Length: 271
Image (cartoon, rainbow, N blue to C red; front, side):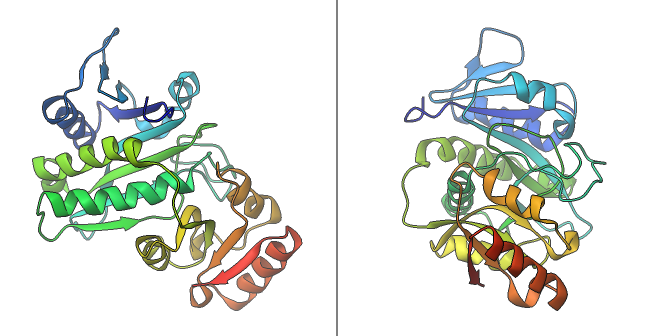
């Protein structure tokens, strides 16, 4: 499957956007009913319906035979902006209110994040979607996963969640992530600083310079050494570059981070 990469797409039955993506997988991409209820099989990807929130799906995720897990989901924001977003999962703080484990990051793949961003951009262009922003978010919420796991989200209001073309774009990207994850020129990295919507890191990915796995926004600082280490050890490609949003961190937080990155022998690159 998918050049040897076994990929599973998850969609919660509680999530209208996720179920619309699942519907497009079946209607536009030929996914057929699989050997058990709620399982659909495409040419190179398997899709599964969850009957609980995806944020708390640790037990299901643990049982999956997968090299990469993609979670189709809605995105909520007060702005209501039309967007398609990608992010890794995990909790930078002891607060695990929205799933996952306290102060633990899930496995991610910088290569898959990079591919997901470019796949969403291509899908928006292919479908000629207007006023739809593609973006990258900092790492947040559950579920915890020992296998590389990403969220692909449709935002940010009911109008977008029920928009068939936006669901089509997300579904197309999920399929193409699997097809197109391959060697790239970008260097693998983790990102530190800036806002939750990681615009500087997004630009670095779009430009093809870096493939960024975990991102810690300024809101979760200060970070101890264990969490900084996890940003690298919990990324499949084991990056050795730390992208630092220089102006997106308080001075004392930045200095502590730079010392930690030096201590763990990681190259620092300003963005």
